[in-house]
Image 1 (cartoon, rainbow, N blue to C red):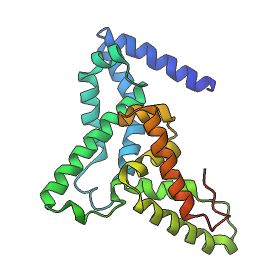
Image 2: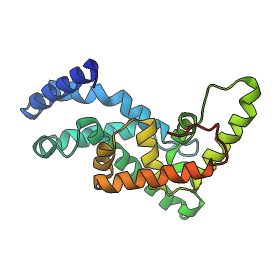
Image 3: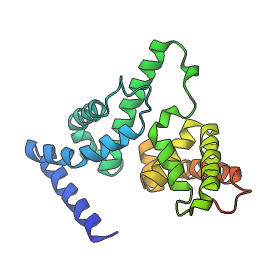
Length: 211
């Protein structure tokens, strides 16, 4: 853990204690420290078909309001570190909005299989496939991208989500378990299973770089 991470954790801890003691200023600062990161996360999960109906900033604001309401419970129980907890609140809110949209459409099966991750699917593909290609390698790289994206589309949504959180958002397995409200062993198993399926899809391509 680098010094900046340690400093950030110490500052978060200080603000949490002050906010729990009833300091509204500390609560505001605490939440605002994470607003931009949360907004990027939510925005990356929105594809072009839902952006007109779901605004990332509205999702984050709803999560912030819920966080403020539940802060005393969080401070008492500490189910997971603060940002992963906010992440869980925001993704839960986003999932609720998606379900409402699908209910209005009347046929959730029409949703594209990878749409639940929005732009984060493409970002994950970029992270999992080598980027240091020469012009002569560009075609092969695009073919690998296509294969990885198709493999992602075949995964269960929960498997895709755990890959995004681990490789795109850099959460540790224990944090992923807390966000998804599953055991650490279950989170680890889900991650390994999803990664093995992706690796299997690229088995014939030794130049693809998988973690």
